[in-house]
Amino acid sequence: MTKRVRVNVRALANTKAARREKRNGRDVIVVPSATLPDNVVMNSILYPADEIEKSFASLNRTPAPAGHPLINGKFVSARDPEGINIGWIGAWNENARRENGRVFLDKVIDVERANQSERGKAVLAAVEKGEPVHTSTGLFCNLEAANGDVDYKHIARDIDFDHDAILLDEDGAATPDQGVGMFVNSAGQPEELEVINSAVDMADQELDWAGMHLLSALERRERASTWERLKSAFMDALSGASEREPSANRKEADMADEKQHEQLSAKVNAIEESLKPENFAKTFGEAIGNAVKEAIKPVTDHVEELAANQKAKDDAEQAELVEKVVKANILDDETAKATPLNTLRALAPKAKPGKAAALNGAFLGADDDKDEWAGFSLNAAAKQQEKH
Image 1 (spheres, rainbow, N blue to C red):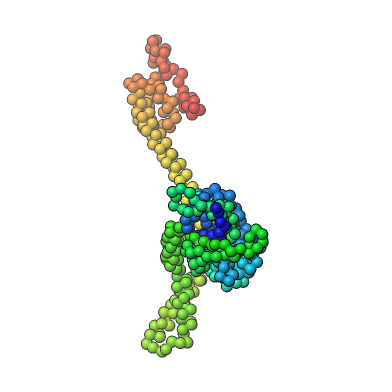
Image 2 (cartoon, one colour; image 1 turned 90 degrees about the vertical axis):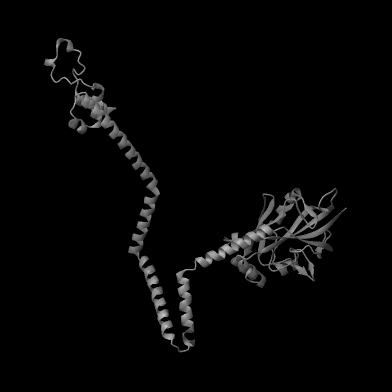
């Protein structure tokens, strides 16, 4: 046996991720939120993943009223004409999706429309301040009795989402207390339905929000600029000048105010000077030059390292070849050291320790016709080595 009920499921919106957009020329604020996790159990009711999968898309284009509309103390549909009049602040739900076993959706708030009601203004103020904003999803479902040894009594079937409300300082869906709602049945007749208020376990979300809010506050305090401090002191000095009583400290206070004013003026003058075309161009050019130099530094460092390594190898090779040609009596030490590396490479194959180079063929004996230096040209050898 099944029965039809209305369930309000409370969750927490992510005001830290709120963003501003233009829609049809109108300013809107988009606030990410979430609702039913897969297979969650609340108030002894299981919400199966497959039932959520079949129905979550019905959240798209539903109203996002400020609170669940109540008429004569009874919940009504947010789509009911009277429900719209009570809760409408120009906000709706869109982009419903399931990710990582959870239903996510975005709340779009029309800024101009929200500012036309006190509740709408309160919602905008809370979002702007990054305060915790709860949401409560109003849905209808059939409750099917559970069988077997399980930790729930009913299973939610045929889920139909009516709206996802924005709550401010409301307890309507924060406790498991039951209520009554007046809704229109399929025959178009008013019908009373049992209303079950539930809340998703949000302990981690609440802790995250509190931690992020504290960090944000500390960052804002740390970033308090000199300008703001000086401005505050300056305004205090101006507003309180006519109310101060004469005293021995008056002169000192005036001197302090004058000093603060001079400091403020100096900062303003410095900013104006830096914004002059000639100074701005210079500063901008220097900034670009430094940025480019910094960006290519790893490349230039690598090239310089390669060049240094190659020079070290060439120096070692030249020293070795100098030693060879000197030992072979081809060149003396001073001449060998002044000889280019490519020339030394050409001479090296002819170098044999202890054998002097033939200076004149007339001095060769009859058996020396196989002298390896015959016809050797130093310049030709060097040029041939350079080609390689």
